[in-house]
Image (cartoon, rainbow, N blue to C red; front, top):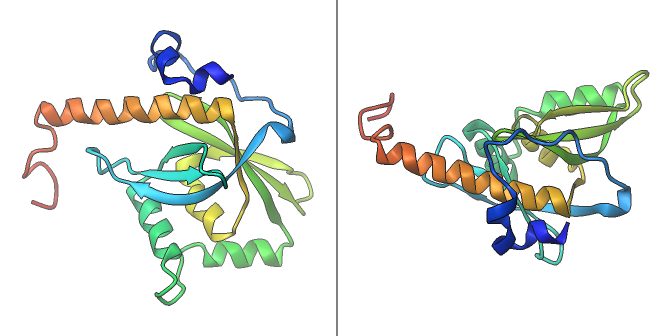
Amino acid sequence: MKDLLDLNSLKAQIIFAQQSQEEETFHQNDLVRLFPYGLSVTTDASRPFLLLKDEAHQYTLPVAVSPIDAGVALSQSNKMALESSPHKFTALLLQSLQIEIKQAVFVEIKGSHQYVRLYISGHSSLNSMKLRADEAMSLCLYLDVPLFATKNFIGRSKVMSTEVESGAQKLQNFGFFDKGSGYLN
């Protein structure tokens, strides 16, 4: 596990194109509690990264999110603006049904997507569900759901984010992101 966090040993051990591992198994005491820290927009503006850090700022988990989810997360974190979120209805619905998301744990990487397992209480037949992290992050932040990952997952996610960034740079070099290629010129 420690060798995954050592950047010098990553070159030989992990190749992004390989199939990902199955969903991680873990014990609660293996998990690192993470908090929202910031947003990183790289050369690929269509794939910003939400940065999560542990309390001691020893571990950083980059989470690829959609531009919409990034915008929602940013607007929700603005304490100076009037509170507004597209998740208000979802929060009220969950509350009225007495369903609570207890915690979110990052559990799997498939290609360039991370998956998070949401642990739920109050539902008659469901105690957890797995979603793509980019589809769940702003909701989790809005509901103040505790976020967790293993150190192994954090290390693998850093490799994934590096691969996503370098892939975007290659596309930019081929001219795919030149002026005039999108709706906004």
